Image (cartoon, rainbow, N blue to C red; front, top):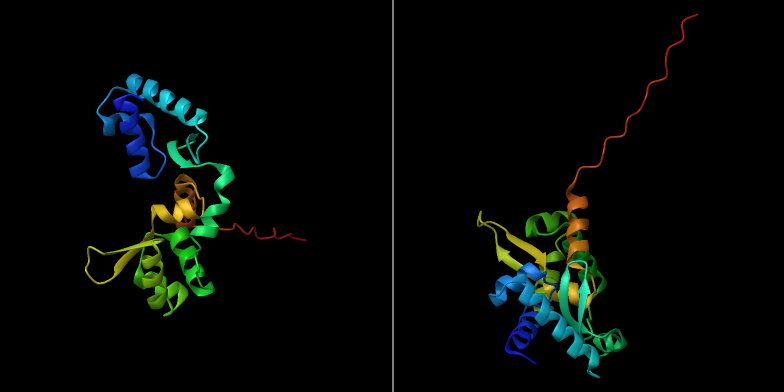
Length: 179
């Protein structure tokens, strides 16, 4: 394996999300053609290994991931013991986030104050101070996307759709008939 392929392997491992050729090129400091060749070499090497990992091409780019046959180990070895309330809070953050903790409390109620620290500790949610200094912003993490096997592009699309106003329903008035 060349030095560039091991660098690409390290980048894919550390980023833990799909990366495009352009992103890999920028991170590795090489031109696109060289990255493509090194990536094909790395993919070929992983394809011939009898290991648990693979380099996969997705709609959003290339990623280092667990082979499909080992996906059952995720639930067995990394169980997410999330209560129903915390899971519902996590769902709201995933669908509407990033959002302020105040907005989240308005949607889910005061139980959010117990759910957020639990979800942060599990690594599914990130909490950071809002620029206004009054409320914290809450959003899902890369671990959330990996654990629940949700492509980040799909998550962003859902968030975009959930923040767009619903189209107003047009109600046509019945025409008056003069006699």
